[in-house]
Image (cartoon, rainbow, N blue to C red):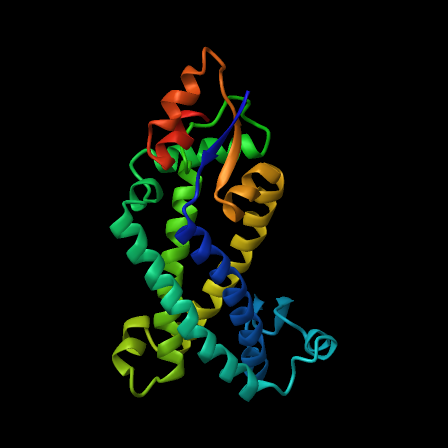
Length: 241
């Protein structure tokens, strides 16, 4: 029989759905800013193997000549990104949600097993928890990346006023490289995250929209359903996986 199991509280869903469009728009406005000095490439000397955003890209998407507009949007969205991230961290601390999210000494070993499972190289069932080791590492890393983006962004935006922050990054150019690399990291995270959501199916996606999943339980006189109902929401989700 199927049972409705609560999984993600409203606050977590709110922070998630606010952050996704805000970060996407920040990346897009960041490309407008990057157009003014697009120096990064993969290669050596005069040899370029790959150049980020060639001239044709800017022309096709009408990104060129929008430096001022990009900066305006970027700094407005930065405050939303910062406040949403700060509230998320505070919520996880005071609600106890951090216990499920923070990696532990088993998380890295478990993450390897998750990757092997996703690649079809491991057939066994994954650990029955709200967040597996790979998710714990990924979600915690994104929070740390957010802090890194904020600090490196401030160093780039006000290098004189935040000279100590520039020095902490190893100089202005280093701060800009860090900011750019973190942006690439967000894009890669988006790609993997969306692919995982599609792979997991509608039930998993619904849990982040409505907050619950439909789970098959063992109908032994309703014992499993009764036991799950007596647990807190997060524990109930774990007990029925």
